[in-house]
Image (cartoon, rainbow, N blue to C red; front, side, top):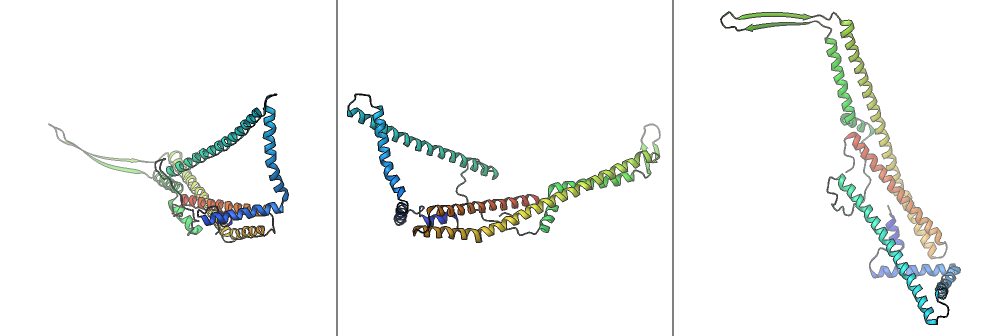
Length: 327
């Protein structure tokens, strides 16, 4: 897949550091300016007249601020002060503008590095360095495999299954309460001066209040069991829905990534290169080149956005299934 940086490098050569590429870039920019001035003469006239307009602006400004009756030396001094003030103000404006952008960029980078370090359980001041380019991960499992892995490891579903098992045991215990209980005991007591005492005990409990007590306890336990099973079915349905949604999103993003990388991006890059060649021969205008280059940028951004959506979908599938899907 051709990236934007490759297109820019081929089109202008601004990233080259050797003298030959710099000379080639200078010659290309010179030809571009010559084509602009020959194709649009009004642009050359405007640039030529602009110089005299700036000189006239400073001249009239110096005349306006010169005290009446002053000699030519005072006028030149006032004009020089205006020119110097304008140049210094322009310099400070551009300098402060660049400094502000640099501070903002440094703040944004520091925030992102702190977030990455916190996710990796590292000190926040740890240098992150240059990140490797993210490549699309492959989803090697089918939806049935993902569902089986999720049902075996998803904590919410396992907790609900444990509650169902507990309620099932509670039903069995409640049903045993309707049966009579018999107990047989033997006691022995050693006494000094008199004979030892022996005893035999027998007791039983009969559920004579079964209808108002044991049967109601059984009904309550059975209702709790039904409620737990319904909650388990609900959690399983929600899990299946989330798995299918994330799987479809990952598959759709993967298809779009292939479409961008194999068809759209190469075609748009060829369109930019063709428009640059036709512009150099004078067969098209500069606006068309800019529009084609902007289209390539939009496609590159769309590709990166689909890559983000693909990896986020796989990360959510890892959360649901416990499988390692992103190397």
